[in-house]
Amino acid sequence: MALKNKKKIKKATKKSTKKTVKKVVKKVIKKSVKKLIKKKTGKKNPVSKKKPIKKSAKPEGNLIGLITHYFPHVQAAVIKLKKPLANGDTVKIKGHTTDLTQIVASMQIDRVEIQTAKKGDEIGLKVASRVRQGDKVYKI
Image (cartoon, rainbow, N blue to C red; front, top):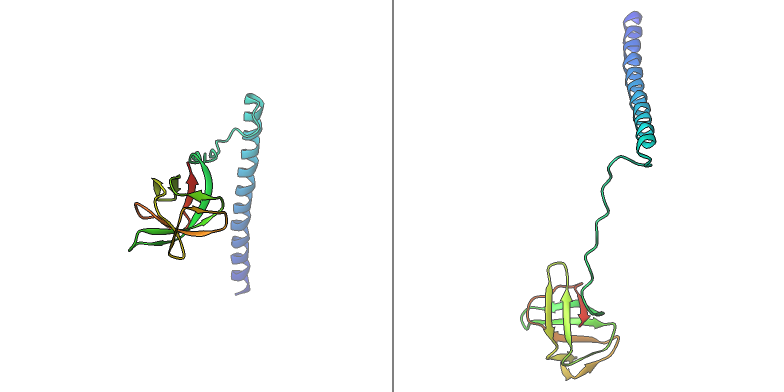
């Protein structure tokens, strides 16, 4: 019985050493190939790597606020302003699925119609189509 256990242990150690030897050999080969390519091409990393994703260009205009809420029944958005806004200004609302440009026609604070809003105000703005929470508002 003891002989059988010893044979099993020997077989198991042979298999594990074969695997580790193969891994080490693969690493050595990869390193040597990289060195050869580096000598020939003069480049440090000849292996192709993924190129960084280019970010799309920012919309025209200055960021003036963020959409914090949308009321679909009345088609109005709540905007937290970072810069002042007035009636007649053109705004662009840009988000993941939203791209809307319109002129500011109706603004309210606490259900009271206003002509201008200052930095830090949370205003209600009548919008032409659906917008989402987190969309950015730019002044054009």
